[in-house]
Image (cartoon, rainbow, N blue to C red; front, side, top):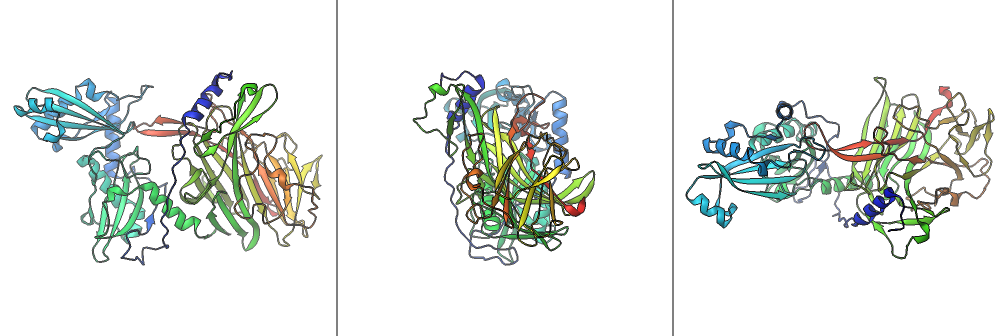
Length: 630
C-alpha cells in the first residue's frame, strides 16, 4: 500500500486488512413461541426475557455502597478494592496485604492515559497443590501459603499471587488474560440484590421473590469464560427454583455493568449449569421469535401500527394510523452507504478482493488520482439474514420528552457489529418518533466508529406515505411557492434554500384532497440533538411492490458519491393521481477532532474504572407535520 500519500488512509486501510475476520455463521434452533403462563415442561429451551435497558440498579443499597467504596479508593490514589477483613482469617489478612504491596501483582492498575482501572480482590485462601509449580510447591511444604486472586474488570484479566505467609513474601505471580475467577462474597450479595430487585424478574416470578428462593448467585467454573454476550464482562446466573411448576428462572447478572442483562425459564432437572448461558445467543433467539418471525401491534397516544424486524431493511413500521386515519403503509431505513476517500488511484490494485467483517470492499476510481472505497451496510435480524450489522436486544419503546414534558413516544432498534466500538465496526439505530399532535419523525442514528476519520455516510430511507384516496401529490418549496411534481424525479438540497414558514421544504398531500397531508421539515440542526443537518437528496417514485415493499437487496454503490442507488427506480413516469414513495437520503461527514467529534466512537474508562464506549452520534432525518397543525 505504498501508493497512499495520506497518513489517515494508510491507517484506515491497515485497519481494514487487520480487521478482516469474517463473522462466524450463527445457528438458530427453531422453536415455537411460548409465554410464562403456559410453559411446556418437557423442553429444555424456554421463554427468554430481556429487561428494559433503562432500568437503573445503582440505588440498590449493595450496589450503591460498592460504587461508593470504589470512588473512595480512587480518591486515595489506590486502584485495587481489597476484600473486607470479615471475609479473611488472620493468615488471609497477611496474604492480601503482602500481595497488594507487590508491584508485579498490582501492575496494570492504570490505563495508558493514566485513568485508574477497576480491580477487585476476589479470593484469598489457602493454596491447593494443583495451583503450584514444582518449585513453589517445595517452598510451601514447610511453610503456610495462600493464593490471592485479583480481577481487572477493564482488561478482563485475572492475576493470581502465591504468598508465603510466614516469610511475608510473594513466591510467584501468574496472569490469565481474558479469563475470570470465582467471585467474592460481596459480589455474590450484589448479584443477588440485582436479581431480587429487577422489575422484570418480579414480573416473571409473579411477585417479589424471597431471598430464600434464590440460589447459585455465584455459580461459575473457575477461570472459565463469561456467560455474557460480551465475553469481556464478568457475569453470574442467580437462579430461582419453582419446584411446584418444576421450572427454574435464571437471571444473568453482568457484574461489570452492574445490571441484569437477560433471564430465561427452563425445566428443573433437564438443564445444564446456568454458567453456560450465553447472553447474545439468548438475545438472538428472543429477537428472532418475537420480532422477526411475527408482527407486533402497538397503540399509544392516538397512534397505532405494526412493527417488525426485517432481514436486511432494519426496523419497519407498517400500517401507520393516527386516530384511525391512515398515515403510511411503510417506513424503514433500507441501507447505510459507507465511503472513504483515498489517494493513489493509479497504483490501486483491486485484483484480489478485500473482505472486511463479511463485506466485500468496493473501490471507485475518480479524478485527480483519487478514489473512494467502502461498502453498503444492511441492518437486520440476527439469524438467517444477509445483514452484517445485526439487531441487538429488541425494539425499545419509551416516552418522548421535550422541555420536561411528555409529548409522545418513540420506538428504537439498535443494530451493531459484535466488536463495536473497535475500528471498522459500526453501530446504527432506527428511531421513529410519534407526537401526540399527529406529527412524526423518521430518524437514522450512526454511533460510529468506522475505519477512518474521513468517512461519508448515507442512510437510505424508504417512506411510503399514504392518504385517504390512496394517491398522493408531492411538492417542494421553490421561489416562494410550491412546485408540484407530475413525474418521478430527484431533488438535491443545498441546505440553504428558503423554507416555507421558515421550516418546511417539502410537502406531501392527498391527490384528491390537497388539504389533507404533511409538511416535511428537513433537519437543519434545529431538533436539539447536536445534528449538523441532513444535506439530503430526495427521490419520488411511483409505488411498485418489487421496489422495496418487501425486503430490499442492497441498493447501488457505496462509493459513487453522486449516486444513491434509488436512481434505478426513477425513469420519469407520470405520477399524477398515483401512489408514490418518498426516498430520503441524508449525507453525513464524520469528524474525530477533539471537542468536535461527530459520527464517532471510542473505547474509554468510566469513573468507576470499568470499560465504557464513548459515543458522539450523528442524528438525521425529517419530521412530518400535519397541515392542520399549521
